[in-house]
Image (cartoon, rainbow, N blue to C red; front, side, top):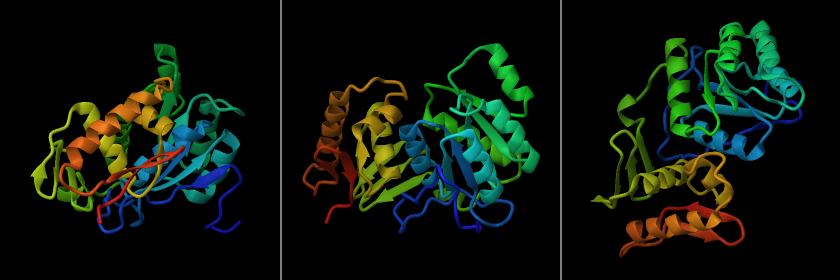
Length: 262
């Protein structure tokens, strides 16, 4: 297998940010993009994580089970691994021990549905660097990953002044200041509207299903109340499209897509 191929059950993500305004999340210690391996057997979750992490300018690979993750890591050589504790073929702690055998200094962030002190201690004792408990905020997960990479000396910040800025057509979001403008005019958003728009802007020209949006904006285990997504999409449209071309489009039977106006 050559260095550009991937084992079965492993999927490479595509970069989802608009190419004219790349989000430079820093470079790895080898001079290339930061590489992150996401290991979870829930495809909707790995797809969301893949899109968001790719939006940081990082290269992302996903694996659905422990054996595939170990094989992928040997080829992909990730700087960080987002690792679910409960996998179909082996426990995440066992996967971690095997990863450490090949990649001694890789940063490992556990995803766990267990919030007990004993479980957290077991993960850290086994060599995990940090953990987030499901349901979790993607903003928190990103912050923890950035912190791990920075402390490990892996990520070198580049273009720091622009890293919080998302641009799709004439729509601009400053994530750090939590400000949005369209055509230079400020757009006032509630917290939930902001998080929904942030997800769409991290995935321009890409269709997101209602389930994916629910998982991201209303926490991972929200339970499928699709009408809430429809309601907040309508709120966003009213605020973004006043007197302007439509940016949020409905793909019937699939979901929603954000595209620059003509």
